[in-house]
Image 1: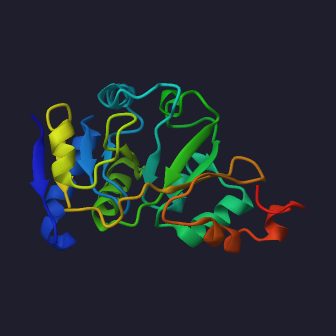
Image 2: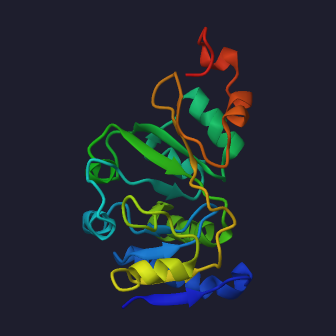
Length: 229
């Protein structure tokens, strides 16, 4: 049976002990639930193959579909992924925030290929939520990599969880800790853009809409006669 810690409305300094506790759980190979600026997430050490396998099992997730990563900042993302000029521009504009970028993996890589379903790409995001950002910063300091698996807290094919209580009803037994920050401000999953080539492709539209993306990726940047691909 996992722990449920309620921290809604409390300042970071007041709950720092619990966030350090959560980071320590991650380092120890345990799985946690947490709020983001989007829906609630499930996560653990992305360098730990046992953790990766357990998250796939808990979610009943198809192993041909990779898991996404949350990182503390763009510098951490650059440790594991390659940024072309368009990806760099998008990250500088929308991070931290509700944009996930699909990028080419760096090789060699500290992230096991099982996490990305043995694909040459990896999905990364810097979330705009103080709770999970602080945990990521602690991990960066303690482990020299401020990264965490950041998959949505739901069984595969079901709607995402938007509160710590929802996560607890689904996963309190199989996971080790849930940080409950209250209801999600956004109940919409993130926008996903594939920037693994010089022709970016919107895979999913969330809070960040296509017109906002087009304002950043203008015709000259795209180098396409027909506009956005």
